[in-house]
Image (cartoon, rainbow, N blue to C red; front, top):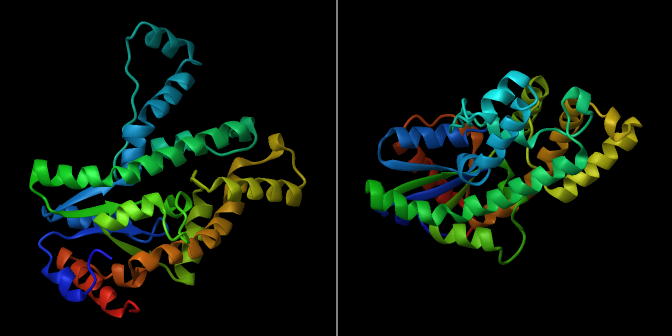
Amino acid sequence: MLYKTRADWLAAPKRRVLFFGMSGLGKTHVATLLRGSGEWFHYSIDYRIGTRYMGELIADNFKREAMKVPFLRELLLSDSVYIASNITFENLAPLSTYLGKPGSETRGGLPFEEYMRRQDQHRRAEIAALLDTRHFIGRAQDLYGCGNFVCDSGGSICEVVDPWADSDPVLDALEQDLLLVWIKGSDAHTAELVRRFDRAPKPMYYQPEFLDRAWTGYRVEKGLTEQEVNPDDFIRWTYARALAHRQPRYQAMARRGVTVLAEEVAQVRSPDDMIELIARAIDRKDP
């Protein structure tokens, strides 16, 4: 670990952390709180994916839909309008909309082959964005004189690495530069995330092997062809299974860092609170 003891962490002139865990447990909230102090640089993996690596794909998808409308088609062809994604740290809807959902096209779904192609684009983009972290650590220092650094990873980080491997190129690189901090949720948190997702299902990135099994299993269980699949129903069915699939992967990643509980994170009100919480997590880590 980058900071092997509580004393190392508290005495460090520059603190660098990466938060990981299920979406909805406070990663972005805490990263935003740290950034708001003016003493931390906030690097969002999802924002980097949606701007640097998939921004053109997202914008082109908007244009493809606009070209179906005669009025907008004429304006686009004459360069009279400009279409772009307005993605932010807090609003990643353009990225999730591009990923889409597989199933019946009349219900807004994508053919499974196209859906998998976009999933693979996301996988490659996420790996690249994670490996860009070192560049942004240097950029934060050089441009802004900011040595404290927080990397706000996406919930799918555990899907693009091998958490159990002795050596993984992405985790190895991250571990050299940051303290990995797992925000661990309880069964109650998981149940609430499932309820929240059920109310407003949204596209996500999944490990391809898991997704292929889910797609086959869902259609066999329901007795449906690809074009009969309700996209929202499929991703609702898949989401709870995805959380169960990810939990041991997060736990294996946490061997490289420390664990804090979502309940503890919910009590954080200041950067000092977070610094102390991580110090306690280092203290209680098994030797």
